[in-house]
Image 1: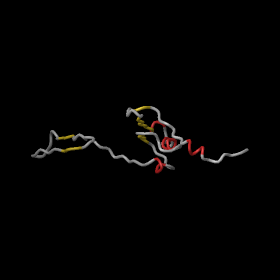
Image 2 (image 1 turned 60 degrees about the vertical axis):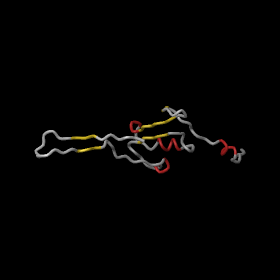
Image 3 (image 1 turned 90 degrees about the vertical axis):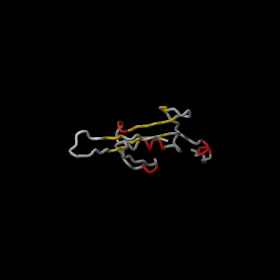
Image 4 (image 1 turned 180 degrees about the vertical axis):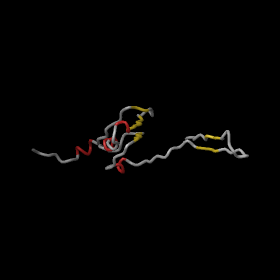
Length: 105
């Protein structure tokens, strides 16, 4: 649970004969989408949140390559211990490769 603080504002010098108070919540509009939905788009700013490794091979590349500049890329990765880290696993399921038929030269 997150608590969003209320900010109360009261103007000091007003021309009104009564006092009024304005309450604001410090929130900012943002949008979210899955890695699959982001495919084919170019975005100025991308924030990636990885609480666990990505699901399939190639998803990390797709997620990182949507941004138009390195300055617009922000990544938050959590390790197994729940602390932020600077690396993630490139998920490859070896069973899939072993079940493929071999190619003979």
